[in-house]
Amino acid sequence: MAVKVAVIGAGISGISAGNVLQKTRGIELTIFEATDRIGGRIWTRYENKNNFTSKLELGANWVHGVKDNPIHTIAVRNNLYEKLNMKLENEKVHFPCRDTIALREDGGVIPKELYVFVKQNYASALQKANSVFHDNELRDQYEHTSVDDFIRCEMEPVIKASSSPKDAAHLLDSLLTMETSISGCDSMNQVSVSQFGSYKELAGRQPPIAKGFQQVALLLARDIPSEAIKLNTPVTKIITKDSTVTIETADGTQHDFNAIIVTSPLAFLKRNHIKMFHPPLPLWKHRSIGRLDMGTVDKIYLEFAHLDFIPKNVYNIFIAKQQLSHNWTDKIYSFGLSDEIFLVWVTGEAALEMERIPDEEEVIAGCMGVLRKALHNKDIPSPVSMVRTSWGSQRFFCGSYTFIPTGASVNDIESLAEPILGADTKPLLMFAGEATHPEFYSSVHGAFLTGQREAQRIINAHNLNEI
Ligand SMILES: Cc1cc2nc3c(=O)[nH]c(=O)nc-3n(C[C@H](O)[C@H](O)[C@H](O)COP(=O)(O)OP(=O)(O)OC[C@H]3O[C@@H](n4cnc5c(N)ncnc54)[C@H](O)[C@@H]3O)c2cc1C
Image (cartoon, rainbow, N blue to C red; front, side):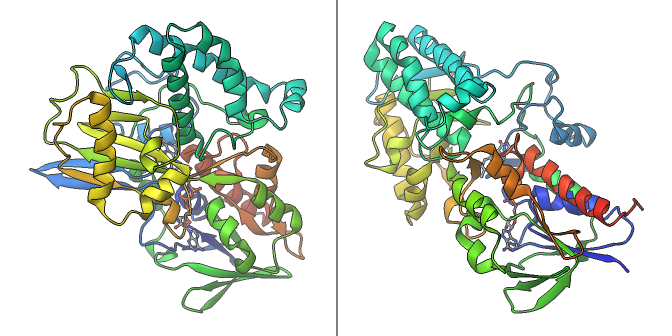
């Protein structure tokens, strides 16, 4: 008899699990996806203008390090980088500051030397923060310290020694805000320095996928029979009993399975697991879900008719400012140019505040206020179009990606990944998704690998073979 397997979610982890399972003899696969699309937090929006197709990445944008990255392998094999012409392997990750201009929030250029001085010392402090995790003694010593406290402490003498301590302090504030968009939190005060280095950086560049990141998910989904993927089908209840698991979908229908893989994002689980799982999840898993966290990172794309207002050869306007939190726009720290379109990042509480603004013109005005003030130019025209994301208020996501707060540890990621066994000791309820990878949480490649991991767990437990 076939082993009936359900996967909840058609993001990259669900699709990678499905891709492995459909190649296995003796599996009957169903993927339930709440939304109307495949990809989850990978979401490319294509636009056709004057016979030219442009794309906007609303979710994942870059392959985070190409060395040993399975997503890079898929992209190369399938020509997804097509338009890119660069040497990718074995190059050091670098964040160029060559074409960045640093400005004070109320106008005025910060000297390049000062910007480079602060940025380089900040990079060293960050590296030091990363190394805490790998040293048992330091890890214990800094158990309750946040990344924010650690970095500020490291940077104190640097700021004092700089040519302008006030500018240097504001640069540091903005760099730490930038870090919140990388870590996926409201403030680096939330992130544990003792666990910060548990995320393993892959070497090499961080290329975008020229054809659109979504193509990675669609390519993997191509091998799965389309009737096995049920879009617009939210799962509302998961009932486990002995060696079977029953899933109830939003329309009230129930389906029985021998095993299920849950890939719902951590923030969705935090909000919904108590009403979703029957019986409730064991206390150890419940506690780990409670301790880990996932914040909101949003993007605002601003497209201008022309870019005459920015200095030549500048692709990134970095704004040094004291990070207050009176208004969501206080959190804007840069305007980065990508394919003639400005990208602005907003994180945490500020992102949620921005998402709540119903009027798009108000969001545009907020961004333009910051840009005009920093460039000291009231005449910068408004953008011709704006696209913003709202990951925090999307019901089946409730945020952007996972971080490890103070009080939590990588053990919590491991216990989230731990399966719940049925009466026959075979895995019954499994968990995949970026939040369940102990080294690559928050990334696409991490999510992809966890889908493969859980598919393999089922295959091993049931002694199944490839078709
Ligand atoms: C703004 C942003 C930028 C990012 N940038 C990058 C980047 O540059 N590089 C990178 O590597 N990573 C990046 N990431 C992170 C990356 O996108 C994610 O880590 C990864 O895509 C997560 O995949 P997943 O399968 O774990 O989860 P998801 O993609 O969230 O998939 C889970 C799926 O489950 C569905 N679901 C949830 N609950 C239910 C339910 N009850 N019933 C049915 N379906 C349900 C959801 O609709 C969703 O489709 C970014 C993320 C965001 C938001």
